[in-house]
Amino acid sequence: MANNILVIHGPNLALLGDREISIYGKFTLDQINQALEAVAKKEGVEIEIVQLDSEGDIVEKIGKAKKKFQAIIINPGAYTHTSVAIRDAVAAVGVPTIEVHLSNIYSREEFRHKSFVAPVAVGQISGFGINSYLLGLIAAIDMLKK
Ligand code: DQA
Image (tube, rainbow, N blue to C red; front, side, top):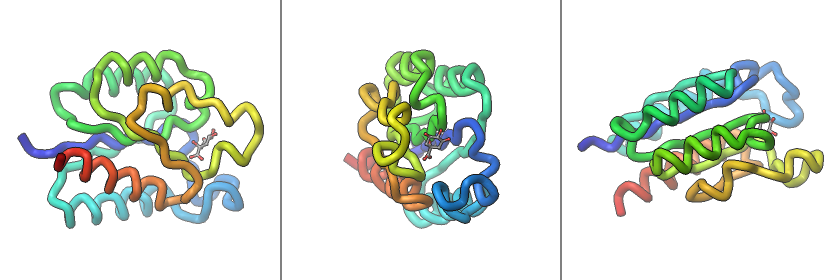
């Protein structure tokens, strides 16, 4: 089976490039996706990228991931800090999941210090801007090779 990786961008991430640039950087979501596609192509893996604003849509997408995807990279956005439902979806499907954040959530407001998803993720990458996604993808590819 071909290695197929699902990338989920959570709420408000379609606004990147315009949104709180001092925190999230100047890259648009399209630019991040192009960079991800380039790495995927180079490494010979398939990726599907979605941006979903609603919690239910994210839960549904994760819930259907088992048949098609061998790994998930997710930036759950603000749901990171609130969503038991997304955490339960990740735990339920058992597809290895890597959590990524553009900003360092631990250097920001205290309410961002808790991630509901991190305990059921393989690992978390936080604070490297666009590179958080690229590092997440490299980690996922490496994991699938083993
Ligand atoms: C974020 C961090 C979250 O706290 C925030 O709500 C986001 C983006 C990040 O990528 O740094 O929407 O997940």
